[in-house]
Amino acid sequence: MVTMDSEALRQRLEQLTGKRTGIKQLGRQHSASLFGAGTEQQDQPVTHEGHLWVPLYENEGRFTALWVEMEGLSPLELQLVNYAARNYAVALKATGIKEEGEVEARQLSVWLNSQLEQEKIDAEIPDDMTLKGRLFGDMIPFLLVSENVHNPQMTYRTLMKLLRNYFENEILLIPLQEKEWLILARKELLTGGDDKEDEEESEDELLAQTCMGLHELIASEWVGVFHLAVAPAIIPVKGLTGSVALLRETIVLGRIFQVGDYIHLPWELHMERLINSIPDSRRRQLLGQIGDYSSVLADKEMLLTLETFFEMDCNVSETAKKLYIHRNTLLYRLDKIKQETGADVRSFGDAAIVKLAMLLYKVTKRK
Image 1 (tube, rainbow, N blue to C red):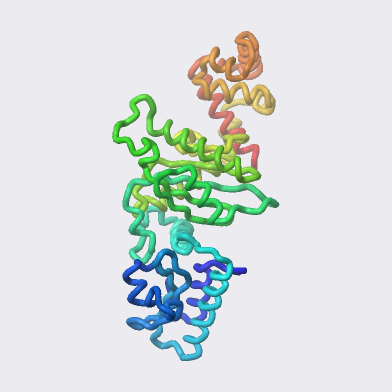
Image 2: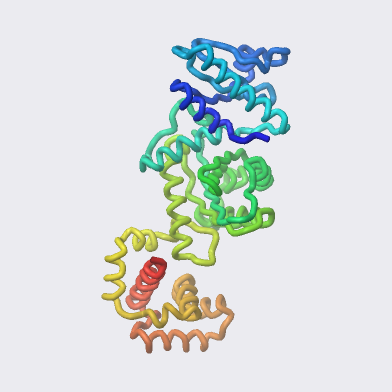
């Protein structure tokens, strides 16, 4: 049983030795020259240009190896590094698992989380990231966050297999925090590789449809509640940190303002983002100044009516249809809202005020 992942092993050895360490996936030619791929010695550590290289696993002639700077290390420290890495490699081999890029993905994950913690949302991916060469084209980022507490989590391998069944194009899967996964898919998935643009649907609509399809697929295999967000295409080498920050914020906002929904789209949450950025004391003050709408907003039926009415662009017929109620029933509810609050939501000005009050109520109610 492998008790840690490769990135955790690297971090532990770096702390132990005080020397730079890294994990690198080598090309076939480099693998053959360094480890003698195909020979009896291919699983043995080697020294090269002042570094100790220990092979961790091999996949189709490409080795993924741990390297450590040797200068200043004692023979005992070198022996310890080699022993720890070889034990990991043996344990990994015993499981019969080839990580299929998980080591490289976790390396990028550590860097990403570090940049986000420092709020460096415009940082460019450094050259020592093994995956950098695959991050120059347009890609669409998805963020998957699970709320499961008791159910076992999907492994990297299981989730990757599921994603490959959905996306025909090349994808990358990056495990970020616990129960949080970043998925990067080629932009071509929106058109299926066809150069002709779909004139009937916007890119936002196509992204939303793709997100819905992916959510349905994962829900069919993954027991429990999870949230999914998607952002417009980016060139990850420069735009990845900012996009992940946006996706994380989108899911936070979705949990607050879109209770009961599990697909969240950043372009649908502009007003919510603004409301959430206001200090809590100021939000409560604004809610008091706008007027007392608590009797309506605390009523689940009325709240659903308002949410649907605004979602359907204040169209009475479409709202009634969406709520499966008669048009006259909807008009009765709208008149009741007017009687209790003085606001006629069929008027744009009143509708905007009630929408603002509704969002303020949702975020302050959670405090």
